[in-house]
Length: 167
Length: 167
DNA sequence: CTTGCGGTGTTATAACATATCATTTAGACG
DNA sequence: CGTCTAAATGATATGTTATAACACCGCAAG
Image (tube, rainbow over all chains, first blue to last red):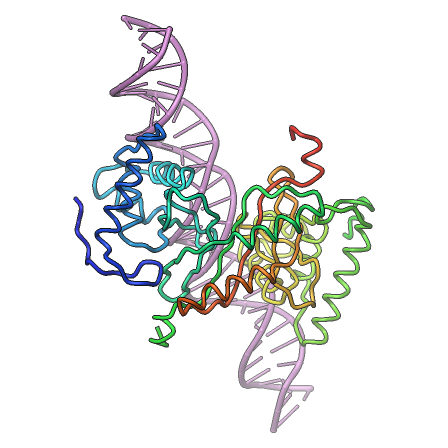
């Protein structure tokens, strides 16, 4: 376990020390679960680690495959439960456009995520959607609609994929 | 056919003369297809009519059921093709959050839709997302990401459902 | 110790979506 | 008027995503 991936792989769309980022995020999640009395079980921990290792959107079944390979739950519900836990507690987000999941880039901070989804390499960067939310909330209020959750996703091409044009 | 629904049903979340709105939208679509050389075939026309009659998000299979009842295509691809045509040409939108489709409220106008989705009654109102898009495009540009398409969806409760609290 | 609750295992199936190839239809063009 | 072509539809099969339902287990509170 702890496969030690290449030290520098793109996150969002920028390079960084990846093995540290995985470890740090995992440690932070662990700490927060302890603090909030959440149960950071092996499946949940490993599911988060899987998402972090890739830093791209992964389908539930893709995560499941990897869990299976390690004997951590063999059926879809196992993956969905783990992912639901991560999403419910802000360790990961669901990307609706892709029916997929991605590790949160800044867990702990209260934020409204917006995603930039590269249609070539499928990598996902997370940015903030607060202004968009505010605008939507006020537009909605006019009709008496109460906004509870906002979802902002942009599809396009990241810098890398735009350069290597024909990917 | 042309079931003549109740004359006043909510659209978006406001009341209006529904039978007129269906007729008008259908006529407008017909006119635009003629103008642009698009083929507004019976399946496509009826699919749009089905979406318009309800003014809520409908799954492809839900639309399919109704098409089947009239002998217009019996298999999933029939519905998906019709819906894809409507979406591609701006007569309808896909609501990612619901994996569902909804008739466009202002077809013909070039716009970036934003949706208000009531989680109680599942009705969907369409508003505009231009400011959100602008903000996102500029945020994305910082990392060299080129935005091609933006998706904004808000989940919450509409005025009616908030009143009749426990629905 | 027992009871209750949260988490997990397991089976089955629901819901959403598309690949592929055959057939039909509408319009373009000679 | 034929006939060619491209678009649309028909039909079969299958792929992908998601959840319902119920059994079981372990742990902590009483």
